[in-house]
Length: 541
Image (cartoon, rainbow, N blue to C red; front, side):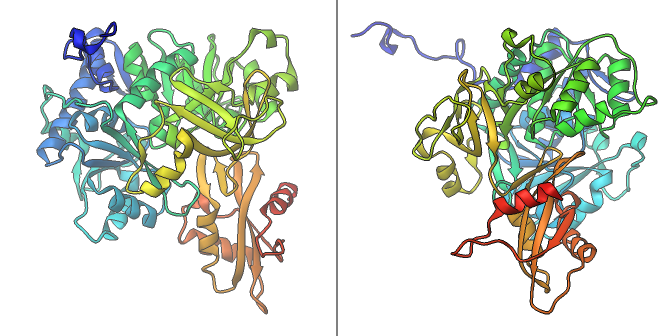
């Protein structure tokens, strides 16, 4: 018999093994940080004891409404307190949280509600019409719709549905949370555009989210009681898991419904915001703020940015304003950020364009991940020469369980024991990764993924269109926007405005092309459209 085996009675038991879950953070904070401010949104200010009680009431009300463990509760909400409460209250009744992008079109929202089989839908009054229209497309019974009005933002209740406050008022603030029996249990369901028109459902487990909250604290050099502004939409990778993280540190969550330069500066000056995350568009907003929008503050603000590398000029300007920016990288399938541009003190002397170029790298694996590297098509490590391209491959506990109801896509994504990101990168001698190109048909606009295949499919539905190819066009505000190249049928004439309007009848506004160029499309000898030529052309427009 070898040393230290389970035969010696060294088994897991209730005393020494508890499934990891971010729910534990708020259960602890309700006692440890009971009177500290947990959530701020205008005049709404709740302590951790009150936050826990409200989340408990939501869990209790959902259970009473018939929601059973493992079933889905969906939301169509901006970054308001109800969305933060749903992140704890929904899993606290054993259910799975499905936060839906508020910018999606009726058809896609209907697809998500149907595919995820949501039992309840919490929806902000601003998006009630969208939710009702999406529910009307369902063949089966629609989810119970609970309306979340926001008077301060100008959205009073319609009177057509039970309101959120009335709903949770029926719940018990002392409700006994249904904690996971297995940390592999599903916590959240997030839909990504991926590389196909129909979104895929990415399933998170409790373990991965818990470890994300732990690793982020280290990478972001966080200390106790940070003041965090929720700018990243909570429907996007659950806001990179930051709302689940705040109770761990007794931090204050400052909700931000409408992302403006004035709102960001006001929160920093008035609430003492110390941290926020956002796409490069947010950094541009801060840099380009008017004098009237800016406010003075005397502390450094830590910023995580992802989606696309920020422009060197933007990085240079924002650091001078009192912000320290760290580039991170990840995907919906990895709970958000899993790599960081880990700064080396040896680079401290770098200035200007050199410093910005280093800061724009995607970097190295964050501490909760096992291995993230760049491999060639044979899944062999590429040379660390900053020149040889390969695909970013990811392995670790903060990788999704898989795609909901899509085992074939899951198997393909995990082939060879790594998650295949679809992003092409080079690797520097120190191991830092730098994206050279991304999955060819994905456009990242304002931090949101747009499938070019989906946009092309819509354009091809126009009676005048013979072929359509959509690529990313660089944009100062959004990072990238869709640019369409269209080959018309013989004898037809192109009308750019009309074609864009046609696309917008089906697609969410941010997915519709911002520019349409009518021309014959470049093709290979086999008829494949040469998108690399169109990308170069779009960059010159």
